Length: 369
Ligand SMILES: *Cc1c(COP(=O)(O)O)cnc(C)c1O
Image 1 (cartoon, rainbow, N blue to C red):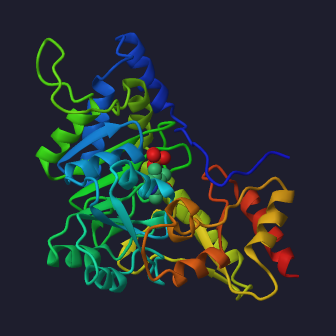
Image 2: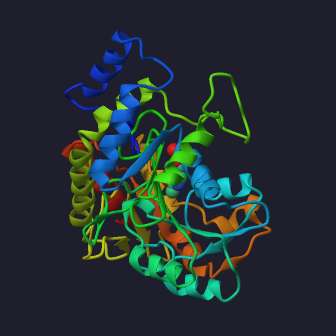
């Protein structure tokens, strides 16, 4: 029984990724930087519609440098989305700043603009980090408006939402800075990697400088600041160049998977899907559901799938429930707790066949019968 994954790397059928890697070998451009990095940065920026970008070792590194570019330091408050992966928040703690968690709204599960406004009555943050969870856009225009009103910069964690378009604009380009991830299970992958984007050229230049060990322009090694080794390698960027060519195809496949679940499970009224708004084209990175039942839990569905070697996952455990973030404040919290209790991410691998999807739907239906 071959395993069906939640989401796994999916290289192009055409072999674009390998061509760019081989090209780098031919030119002995294995390291450190080179054409693949330059082109990957340019092509992604062009695609999403932003001026500047820098390719990094991870999305987490991109968030770290975004916070640094905004001058976040020890003791500063940073508003963070509460329902997310811990990588959104960890860099805040690297800088000894203090995360304050903002709970979800009910439509997209992302940061609630009402609670954000409420949080501003209590704190003066240095930055706000909003996330587009599972590839569904946050109410990013409302969030941005509130940030502008209080003159606080916005970072968009678009790690999961490359390809999601909200009111005609790509997610990741609304904030002062945006980040993408190319980790192994994201919609496109470089095996591991990230990108920091902005229309602020100075911020990207500074981030690139920090990412290159903060090496001053000099033949000898001159350092005036602490730096990091965060740049993406030219081999890894070759995979990224190839993957970008199939991004739109992957979005369509993810959307197909989602629609197939919606249709296939429509006979079970206790299953509720988190769905794109009518202002948006979501990438549906993961198809996520809520189970509104007193007798069947997400764990029951997870177990039934696991027995057939099929991977599903609970939704992210909210940050305010994480032992490591115990000491930090949360505005709201009950909504994401309820999503966490009822939520499940269904297998969303783009390599699944129609037969795979039918089988998954049948297994889920059997849990109810
Ligand atoms: C994956 C992910 C990240 C981190 O990206 P890496 O490239 O794995 O460091 C950050 N935020 C969210 C919401 C993610 O899903």
